[in-house]
Image (cartoon, rainbow, N blue to C red; front, top):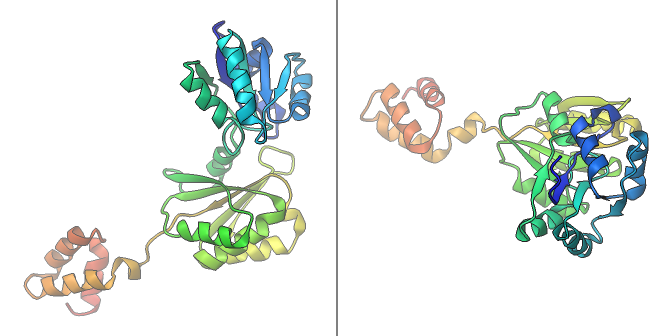
Length: 280
């Protein structure tokens, strides 16, 4: 590890203590101070690996105030590690204000790779992984939660949320209400821990399944939702069909379908099939 002053972003295990890297352990051992979300929680990890570095609490309620003090220490030449209770700091955890202030002050920020519940769960969910959107926690209040899901209704990327056990059923019910019964939903709980489970069902079936056993909502939860996929009806909206009919009056169906697809960004094969079925 470099001896120069720097802020180190250090991911910690999300359940299995063996998931911490040797680089993370070396960093936590060698820095002058560890800023952590909960000193009592981090103390268990440090004790397990016999690390005696001093800790300092940095959480949602004191981050802006404490960030100034930490920046002052960094400018004075200290090396500081930032950890959260589990996973990668800043991902739905404190740390943004501190990192932002360090950048403004010209302090080096070094991020270590490591555990992240959202990515770990997604990799095993069976949903598309080429494009995804992490949305953190859904709002606690019902109207705000429904409004948020409505905003994401036509998002084509796989959606990833964190959720608490007591709100999981309400959130899945909101998904059903806004997205319909059939959108695929995956609930991953206790990822990397003893009772890890990853369950995938259409939204309405998932809601029923969760209600059948309260144990299915326990633990740390990652909630994932398949992205929006336009139906044939959506692809062939009225303006699209109007263009197809107009072009078919002057051109062969195959050519008309190709031009219509280019004009509207629709699928050529769906247009051609529609034309055949409707005698265009």
